[in-house]
Length: 91
Image 1 (tube, one colour):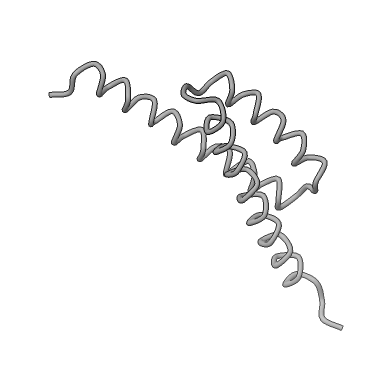
Image 2 (tube, rainbow, N blue to C red; image 1 turned 90 degrees about the horizontal axis):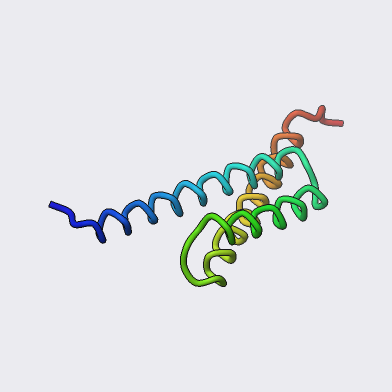
């Protein structure tokens, strides 16, 4: 049986996991459709939201979601470029 501390750690880990999944999905979608100005705005919003919503040391609390956002944005950028490349007619 889990004690209260274990449930609290598990709840915090679940919150961190879902926040990273959400940030990755947003970053990927931004990469598919938008360019750098949208990413800068999303980075500021992510840093502010992570600072208020997540618990723990300040640097990892903000750095991990931002890193996930940037990596997912690059993945979306590559996927969007490949998708547009395959849709364009060959000359």
